[in-house]
Length: 163
Image (cartoon, rainbow, N blue to C red; front, top):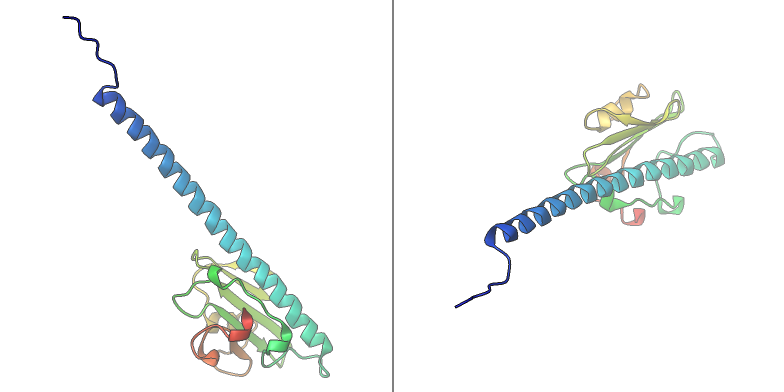
């Protein structure tokens, strides 16, 4: 009797499964990297837009000072899904004596950025907090000029009008 068997051996099937698993893991790693880059780019774009709107408010104010409070009329919008949600993630600080502005943000990727009127947008090494944000412009945390769009002054969450 001549039996002809067709099909794949178990070894051939295992090789195909291993190759597919390797390709899937490469794809997942690449996707996560692209997604993290998108979150960071979104946060940096928000910083630039926020700085422009704050600067417009300063120019339009009667005294030429940065705003002491932020309002819905200022039209802020943030890609909230790109920010760190483990704590406060956006700090706004101004120094009324020197008329300087700083803010710091934390992305959900773990990266942080700061903005000052002198230096513009820069990566920030470490976790951004209110005290180190204000320290960038020689102002003190807890004094005048502190606003959290996600923090103490808005009840622990994003201000409803920052969407």
